[in-house]
Amino acid sequence: MPNRRFTFIDLFAGIGGFKIGLSNNGGDCIGFSEINQDAINTYCENFQVSPSLNLGDITKIKELPPHDFLTAGVPCQSWSIAGKNLGFNDDRGQLWNDTIYLLQQSQPKVFIFENVKGLVDPRNQDALSYILN
Image (cartoon, rainbow, N blue to C red; front, side, top):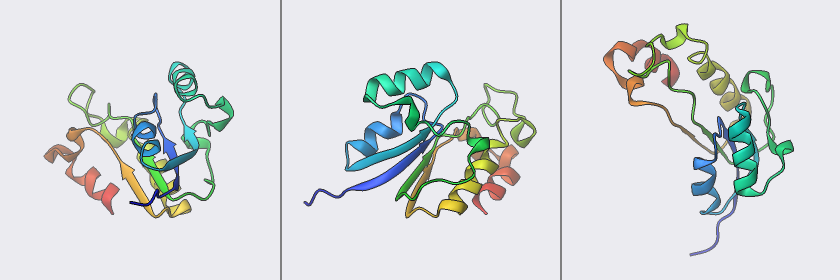
């Protein structure tokens, strides 16, 4: 099997779960977005990358560089039974809008959005339909 190479951007990167899987399968991370300083430090240390690779706060990103693959692990507290179930009424729930904007702006070949199972709960049906549309 040929060694296929692709580029990716890792939004809401945390400590790099998506990065591990994609890098191990031919991916080259050209940028990540994370605001938690402990997660940024861990990500950079674990992968020996410069903090300058961090694109920063997703709400301030207006354009992504060209890439093949986009990942986003949008915060889940807005939709989780462990959270307050505020959905889009929680500031973290609004981060879906920023994520969708960047997806539409960049038009990668592939994307993966990961979230909590509460998002598909019947109480969040309208929100899920909005996200999918």
